[in-house]
Length: 461
Image (tube, rainbow, N blue to C red; front, side, top):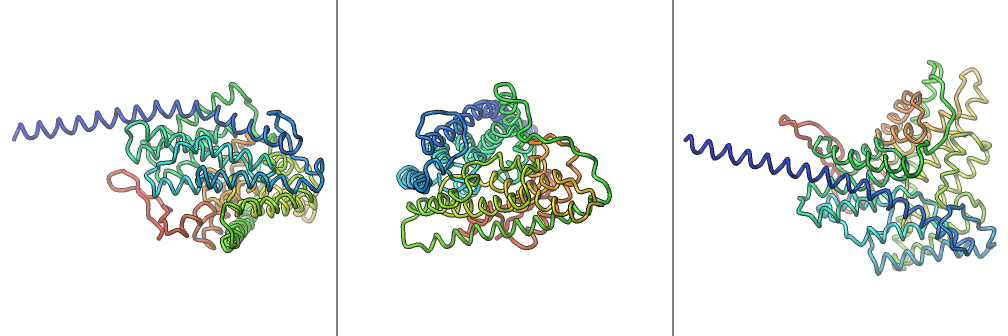
């Protein structure tokens, strides 16, 4: 009996040592992923600048620039169509994994393919996204960099002898590192990985992800900038008279989130009915982008300056609403066509512009409330993202980290929570999960602790 107990104890000790060795390897590899994420992010941003310069100005330069369709006149409509044609061919003959905005595709690989992402996506995804955005596509760089970083982590997890669970962690490390390298938001990146990729909350999972984000943040602040992504003047403390208005706005932004999500998938359904191969859809989407871009040039490209204009109230209400309308139309058509691009920047643009316009109208109509237009724009930016993505805490922290406005925590927490509630109440899926749920995939939604202390999630049919 004593020998049996000794043997069992020895087996247990061996398993503990093996588990700890794997955890150390995960942490070391996560540091490397975080370091590699920064040059990948630089490559993506430089490529966007290169293709924008090439398509719209016919010159070779890496300098970021806003597309100028009027420089080409009516022929500028052909530029997004050409970009869509190239992306369509890359998807058909390279990898269909470059299609879409990145996060749902990463979620699907985690749920159905043991977190295995083809290694070629490390190169194909950023190049295809740079071509799509550089040719005028109204997308952001965050979705592609999350997908690219995820492909990097997954590939390393396939090269080294890691389990499916460990590959998932490495995939999330790459996604968090990539997002941090672009925006300088390490905590928001970790929360986004937890809420949308890991589907769990335990130290074994999020510590490597946090280490990856930290390394990416340090390299970014050392080699690029320490300044916040969006520069805003300091906020004042929220008063009791302002808080109910800010909270009510969260419900309104939740309704807007539902409208945005349903509209995108309604248009995608229309593309599904077209009697042509999906390879040609981005060309048709590019035609819509080109026509709208000729009407409103600011709808083209990444458009981070549009978000800054909304947050800093640099537009009139009419101009903000018109820009928001054209950006939404251009983005929803382009995204639904299956080209390569992100959702975060367009959602932030729509939210900040609508928030600014709503705040400006309220301030003019009810001056006694002393509504801060900048706060309302920030709430709109975060609440629309929270309602559409269902990444509640990532949305809140992202708004705080990109603006470095700690006094925004109270209105952001309340408004984003209500936006999430309204969106969840009216719509079972989100803009991130609708596509894969339609394919019959069961997506984790809720988390609760087990008696053993481990984490698990309930699954939605």
